[in-house]
Image (cartoon, rainbow, N blue to C red; front, side):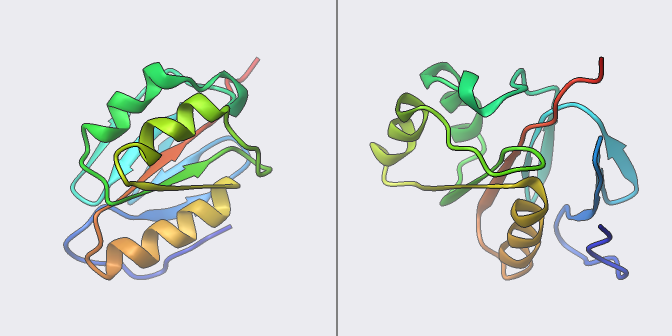
Amino acid sequence: MDLSLDRPEGYLFVRRVGANGITLIDRELTDSFLLAPDRAVEHWPVHEAGTLGAEHVEAVLALQPELVLLGTGARQAFPPAAFMAGFLRKGIGVEAMDNAAAARTYNLLAGEGRRVVAAFILQRSS
């Protein structure tokens, strides 16, 4: 699914979401990653929402989000409570959705100048 024909200025954006990867500007990423308007952190060591735990929260918080979007793959899945609690204790909202919805929402909020961080889970190829 192509999301953007134009090249927005001032923030990193998702151009396309596919079955096996996500195109960030003009580069396809095929491993889970974190995305903030000013930087991407590649090779986030998560490949299923059910494996998320408190130990994964700090990498996301290091990007200083006001809101976290969790893209859980082709389908929406909810992470364990320990992961969600790490954000809620800090007063940071977190929403779980499929990767395409997370990409659309991220692009919209980043385009508005919001400090949004998207965590995209991509399953490893066998």
